[in-house]
Length: 487
Image 1 (tube, rainbow, N blue to C red):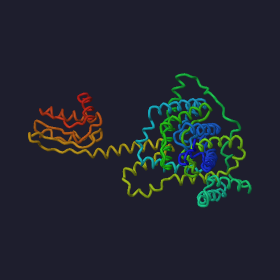
Image 2: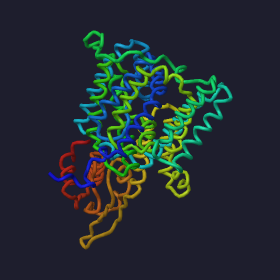
Image 3: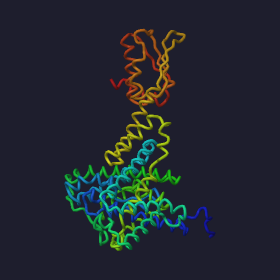
Image 4: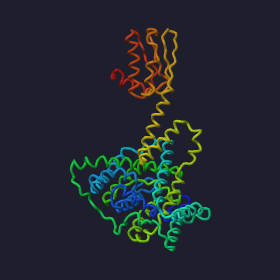
């Protein structure tokens, strides 16, 4: 059999791409360690719970996910959701909630939840990205306050390496070089700087299979169900938004449905290994895709494997990595993630688009919850869109050859645009016969049918007849099913 043409060979088989994927996975693993520890503390669990969750999420999603090169692990968004459950009921209930949340994600995927992404407008996406960049940057501030003065030149040196090295060579990811150089410098010079070891205790054993030690009763279900649904919805929203972002960066298309159930499978596995659950990590994904140039599932898989090897087998080495090096990497990620073009286009953008973007950013920053920000952004976008469309309905009055008053209605008729329609007719002054011509309009909901019924009723109480004509097939079907039933 002849070999595949070069164009059609799997890209991960080439030595150059394989090297890129391996090094990218290593950089992500190093950056994941302090993040997973801090998210564990936020959730109120042992650091090992977050680290093991990051390992299982990354490894499983590498096989089940629909977006190659995207990183999934323990996240702050999930930590915020489950923290009250851990505080009130303990770790075992958390494990049960993560497993149930994973099952819910699989069911949501089967129900077609991924198709809802089409309703997320660009302005929400821009706000989502900008809010994320600000959150990533603000998270680094705690590592820059009340620290030895040497931390600041170390961070500056790390940023210089990350920004300048790609101008010389891209063989090795610049973030990895920055981490290695600053670590060697710190150890060789004996500098006393905050390091990864200060963030929390690293595990010294492998994760093992566990079953949640909770009563299998209806009471337990009522306790964990709200948190499980929170894990499911927040995790899916953040993962699908991240997948869409990577699609735009790589100019490729991902399978959002597969990503949805893949996240569910990853959370179920994570729960059975005692992890805190997770979803796609936008910051780490940007390190993998944008800073390191990874494009395949290999980098995602290796990020999880390297993470486990680093914290279990090489914990003493990882512990001496200065936080200044990782802070430099994350500051670079925040700068690279922010959509600077959106600032330049603010003066020319419609005010409604700007309002949606700012609302998304403001709510996200106020709640530290990306899912909440996106939800509010979509809601604001829908309200402004409905308000804008509502003003596009017009009514023109004329008289035909039979002396009847003819009202020609144009536009999309739904709850927002049809409410004022009832006031645009001259019920007292019109002749005995009136025609409402909807050939230039569409009836979208039952609210509009109720308004049309109100119009014909007002004429009928005055002894006049109003006839509705011009309905297309869909509008006529909706009108016939609801007319006379909504009084």
